[in-house]
Figure 1: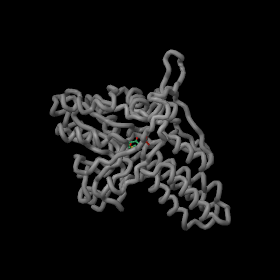
Figure 2: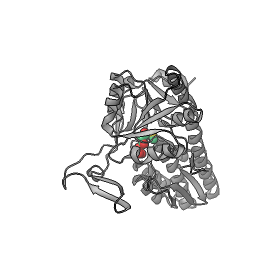
Figure 3: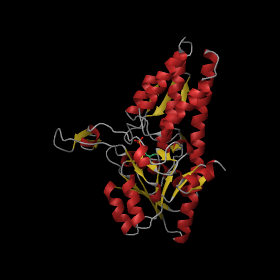
Figure 4: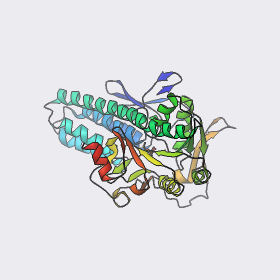
Length: 366
Ligand code: MRU
């Protein structure tokens, strides 16, 4: 997508052995890059969320494996070294399926390689493939989802379509385009009037800091709301449709997404509002059906809940402040699971599926 007229992806190979990312920890206050040269640096960047979002951490894991291959390609014990690097990458964010999927795809491609040159070439080729594929799948998700928005716009006689989204499942969360926001960009670019309600998304505020920044740069009308406002807006007819992303989707259509998503799905159901999750097939975990029982939910440090970081207007610099008494115990679950029964449909690169095993199979095994 474009930032001030220049096209960017969220991750790219800047030079051999140097992977460059947009440093999302600095947004929305500063647009800057970060260079990663070792798999350890990549793990650290993922864990500390200099880059985040389901698809992007998948691509980042692939590039982390590429950097690991450059380190170990000529090692006698290449297999064991790579096994350890893969495990380290996978442990950084346990809920995201894409990460595990990308690492496994890299391992599969490396297994038959004969020597160091072969390994380096395969690592580069597959990391590029995963990156390009993510962007292409997200672009296609946008085209399928756009038609849902178009239908509502027709029913509203051209009145703006109000979309509510949670967290950031825009282009910053993927290589390009995004998932939940891709249909919004496609509709907006097509001249369909849209307006987005952006949940702030405590505790890390990805909605407030990233989604608003993205939408603003693209010129899409939007309004930031506290996390607890969505139900009220829905009761008053101010939300036409909800679009969220997914970090892991079960074979039965349950969706693990940023904490708070489930509450939005409940409110949407109570108010008869369609609730869609948009996801590339790389987030589907075909091995599990019951997401509430079987998806591992990442737990992060309590300091993210006890503190908030933002821009101190008076001092004109970033600041982190504590919002509760010192030493208050805090729980920080990163994701929750929305059961398939609350999901109107899954927007994938192959089309829109019912949130069920049959729905997903119809698209994937057809
Ligand atoms: O913790 P994050 O920021 O990596 O969370 C990922 C998300 O942005 C959301 O859960 C998103 O809706 C899933 S798709 C990127």
